[in-house]
Length: 324
Ligand SMILES: [Zn+2]
Image (cartoon, rainbow, N blue to C red):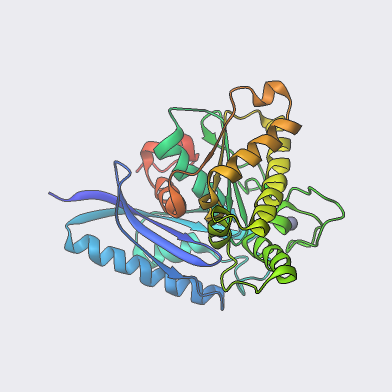
């Protein structure tokens, strides 16, 4: 008897992750490749190879693939499955790319596409948090800052062609550094992987030889080993994230805030500093019973979330009507 599954693929700014996810939410096969950032065509070509590899595995294992859910970097017009904006030239020709049409024509399967911040929260919420809360905010901090918001048990996409939320571009210091989006002082300008790494290298430079690795993971390890510069960076980053989230909590009053992406590997000190800051600037009613936690799904949250886009069982959460 054949087993029904779907494919989830998460095309991020740095890596493309993919897997076959079965009906119970277990990932059966998974893998990752660097995202080719040369052009839109190169990105789609590499993603096609990854999907084909999974389809070959599925066929060998007598697994029926019922659909392909795709998470992409950038803002997405979900109803058309087209990249609508927000990538600021990182991938040439990416804006306007008809992702849904491309993969459905290529593979003859139902395809749904969403932004990677939305898919990260869908993975985390559908498979781990939906029994615990109805309102949740998730920040995924990596190459950029992805945001997802669940309101009343359903992914919030706003109007305007289902574009979604961009907490990463909330201005937290009008006199701050220029962000990739062109505004000044966005959260992303302070806490993206690149910004954190640059800040840490700058501090270390004054006191000692710059270590070979300065990514968030390495900073987390340095922090654990008592590195004073890493401690400064972790504290600052938490302050910025907590400021943006404190504002968001005053606005939405969620029961749960989740931090994902490479930075969440820093773990407890980061989460408790963020909690402190949220507590300092949010109102009592907004922070009562508020839980702030690191993501449970790790870096494959987006793959799981992409998979939910083509699982009809979760259409009341994803907001995508895909009953077939
Ligand atoms: Zn910005």
